[in-house]
Image 1 (cartoon, rainbow, N blue to C red):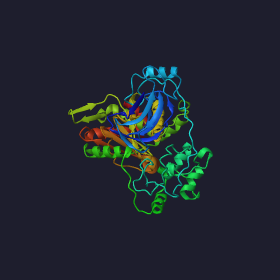
Image 2 (image 1 turned 90 degrees about the vertical axis):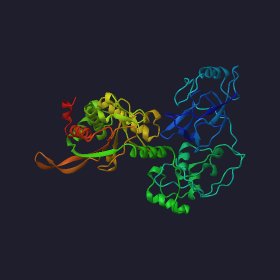
Image 3 (image 1 turned 90 degrees about the horizontal axis):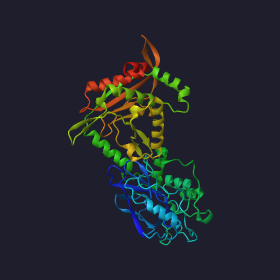
Length: 469
């Protein structure tokens, strides 16, 4: 029998998602909970598991399409109630066993029946002898200046398309597909010269400009402004319009809502953090921290968690609907992370219960996952206070905007060697500026100042922790 899989709600009532890529093709045999697609919500990239074991009969949406929750995206041929296996599927016993465990279909990614087996889908033999239309040389979609690859421009030059009878996806390897995506090339318009029609790296390069690429291809997020402008000039225009979608759209809406809902106040404190930097250097050589990544952010995060114990009003939320102030007895510490898809703020659950070593490990895992675009939606919600590290960009201070639903956000600036008053003399010291923005409905100026002073005191003299706990 044929069953449709409709796009589920991937968390927190999101109404739509973009199909980034399919991990299967029509005719593939899949197992229960096998990853079949990669989709992007307004918050993160999520792998979508199969709710059925069977054979893919139709993919209803193309990559790059924004699909509303509840719309069919893929159809399966699955075993009927009598246990008959679909044609081309796995052996009857395995299919029946998988079907027997699939009583509950997932409505959130990662939920559902236990995976019965793993492995790659068994693909049917494909015919690659069908002639391909001659591509139009140079028909590429130029990357948008300083925008993620996923945001495809609207204004493009015409791209050659394949005849209707050649519906198979172009054959290529993952590195070649990434190269084509970075250059904005439609693989369907490229003639493959490899074995069986395989599209090679040279085919993509030749398609773009006769095989003469003056520099190695880099990810769009690393393309310089000069290269981007050159690309626009080659395209014959001075503007490229890009749809606002995905993480960028969600971030914009959240920041506007925060800026015009919560009355922001920002305070600054410049601190001599030489003792903290000395402590950091000692910890890095300590056997206990061998193999762990320690950074100034690790110690600032720990200082924030300690200071919150004395200043709990900064770990709260204003709920307009119920007209209540929610005081949290736990800390889900958000860390702002710049990713190729835009700004995200994943958080470390119950960070206040972690030791310095555990906090270091959690921070490393959080940032690596965020930059890879694999942060789960659950890790992007429920934060109670956030830190943004603008110092990594060489910035000293700023006025950070609150993450919606949180009372405060701390921006840590760059650590710089500066002349500073020390023991009644001027000495060269390592100095950092802290910028604290807070919701003035929840946090009074005195409370915000005391919190910022506590964080500064810990960083100026880590031994002060003994007087605070």
